[in-house]
Length: 243
Image (cartoon, rainbow, N blue to C red; front, side, top):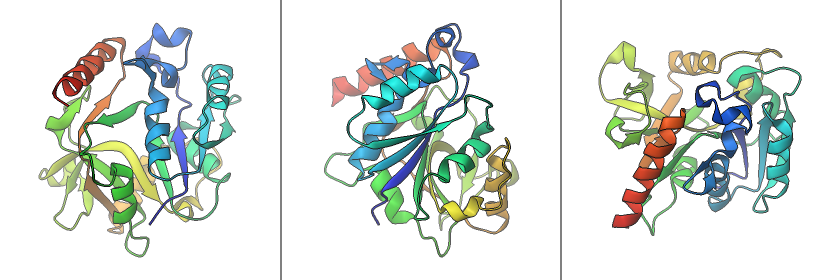
């Protein structure tokens, strides 16, 4: 399956990244010379995506200016200037700008490096793994030891068949959610119009046995604080030195 549409969640305030985010939106903070959101956009373009929705709120004018100059994808703006919608509300609102086919959903401050050359990309493999008959959502997951900047906790337990459960409930085969998933927009058809946390729908899918995951190829980075910028850049330098 080739997925042609995506949403990138980019409307957060980036409060833990202050004072950097006092003057710039978090997705535009540069890591190794590249705005964080461009890692996500480039990965989507490389996977064959054509159209992407990006939601904006904090320093929205800067975000829109940057996205107008991004040439690899058609980018639509989901405007949250009036009110933040939380990750779930923002996703539900943004998906209304796209079609009903499966869609990638990515966070704008999480990315990966070190994919194996000569094989399908992580997003291509995730698209191939997704089966709408059995799954509401399929998540890209990563082993804790292959993360930089994470809080040191597992999010889910990954069963042999790929099914996910909350790690707190199973305490085995732990993995971290890598901030990227595939879903069918219909999953959120009953979503409220106001702000809500998308974890509500993860739990609904777990209860139905329809939340699945597959393991990321490479090393995953999350950048949530000013100190994490240096950690991420050092990790990238190390990987490049051995590439």
